[in-house]
Image 1: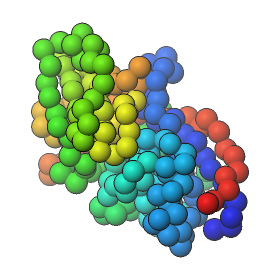
Image 2: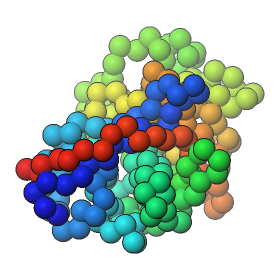
Image 3: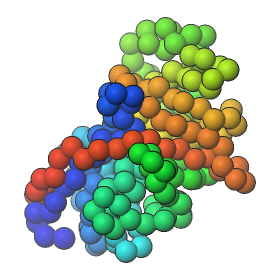
Image 4: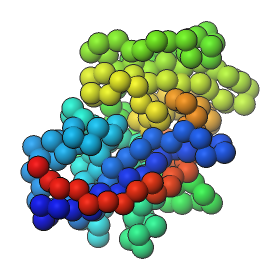
Length: 227
């Protein structure tokens, strides 16, 4: 990569009516960028995650939070898949460090399928009501806290908030990894309302996998100077 490269900013898991969405930074064609530089860039940008696609032809990629690299995460995979398709480089699979992740589009949703056991772990706590989820003032130091409550158990609608402190994030607006874990735990289709207005659709897949999907949009394309 040159000292200046192109940054795409994608919003992932838009809610009904275009609310919410979690910003994602994506660099396409970042082959050979050292891990320390990738981490410094992710910390500088401050998005919940930043993706570095090493090879658009194979879908090899790295995912960094402001503090650590992740082997797999849902919001970066969904957003990167959407961006590649809308740049004319669509793929049927992506390759984060955890291994191959199938991906596809269905209507206005972009989907991925992954083993929830490969997703980052959270301290997941069910609360009695959505109001108690909303009332939380914040997370806990050193804990990747994931709280949820049923909004409508029959319909599979849940209210979620995620505070991944160990990943260097105060509160995450929409967390695909937590959606993978929760759907893997409950083993039923879910409509997840997270943050200020994001929506994640999740459903059990074959052989213990989980499929998560949502709507995305491009927010910005700009030049970025590497450190």
